[in-house]
Amino acid sequence: MSNGSRPIYGNTVIANRRTRNIKVIFCWGTGCGLCEMMRGTWERLKKNNPRWKFDSVNVKIDTRYAENYGIDILPTFLVFRNNNFKGQIIGSRRLTKLQSETEALAVE
Image 1 (cartoon, rainbow, N blue to C red):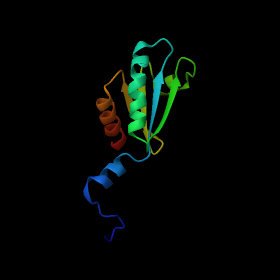
Image 2: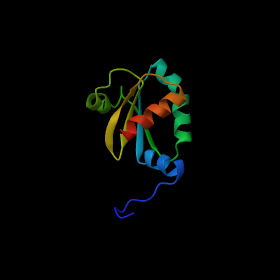
Image 3: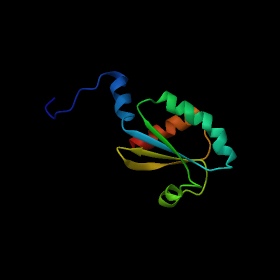
């Protein structure tokens, strides 16, 4: 290929490109019942996506995230790709929905 790009064979390369350099931050708060309910889903998301980076922040203690990203509903997931903020996922989700919404935000 003359433009220097690599050929894409099958879905493996596409999937690898789509999920590269993704970071997800779980914003939660003390006393938030939905946040506690999402903790298991959060742990499974981390386990299912070893190439992604993950962090969690109690926004009631570290208020910078709430201020910088306008978080007023918990839980909120902040999605980044290549260190660029891509968007928020607000509220509780099943694992499959959280996974698909994260990927959709990351590739936009």
